[in-house]
Image (cartoon, rainbow, N blue to C red; front, side):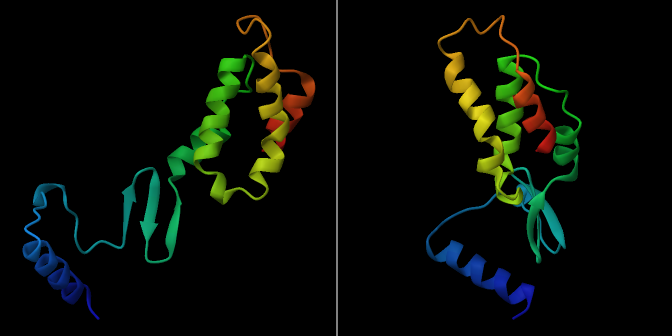
Length: 119
């Protein structure tokens, strides 16, 4: 079935259920499209290259706040990282213990830095 046929079916269903779309926000006939932080194509999805670059170039976390930001970025794309949970476990454990300490003066220890390098 061609793309035009699929579009016809979609528009018929929208009309049947009296749903409206914003044509100015719609994109048709493209090979790939950026959507919610992913590059979507007929081959599947992958992370946006600029987001991957931002993660790989992120400074080494020095504070707990930096570590939380880094882990948040990594977790967004965890489906593309082999053994993501296993590799990040030490860093998450470090954050759990941080609740008992003063967070503004804590820094990430050496073992955690090694783990960050592996990610």
